Length: 262
Image (cartoon, rainbow, N blue to C red; front, side, top):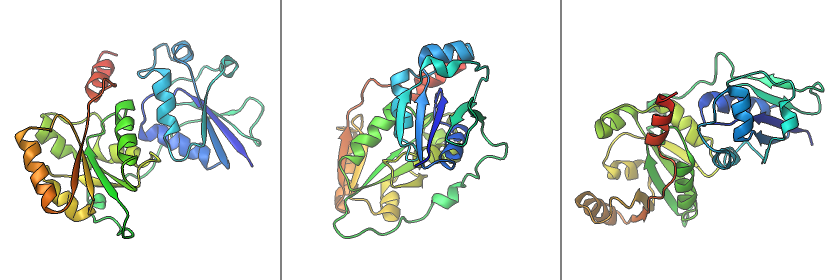
């Protein structure tokens, strides 16, 4: 079995980063991601990573095309001067010093919103389908924990990615990452079975497309007028509404502030 090893910061999951990972995975039978420590990233980039090491390890380990993850040793830094989205790759056919992989200039072709506006495939009777909608902007550890909780409570997890227009209407500002890129990142997570566009606050419309059995929402909805209304609507079609407590993880707002300050 040909094992490939991809070494890099893996800081923030982006389409460009996923492109590098996909390139590496296509060249080996098993892919190991070696994540650089915060200190190593600072020495190479001149800036500390946006996300700490433990979060970066968890995020890259969640990708369906990554088979294993470890922390890069300092000897992986020898001679390294590349910055940005450049990753060291080595497998049995690589030269002794390895080689550098970068995002391809043309990049992957991202789907448009209409491509997601379809009913998902029917599932076998008895399969419990969960649906969790969200913005998933600048995908971070808090997002991953939500997906982990949801996937543990259903047999099949469908994730709704809120469109740019719907986010502007709800929050008054556009997301940092456009819809197609956010959807691509979510779809790359191994916990996720399917991704659909969520263009409306009316979850009955989402239910008509997806046919889910349980809907997951943050517990800031519990006991509110909108939460009570949603519970009533879901009960009418036999859907259970489950609330997730908010935890003190990284937020997209906090990441936006960090990036704006750089």
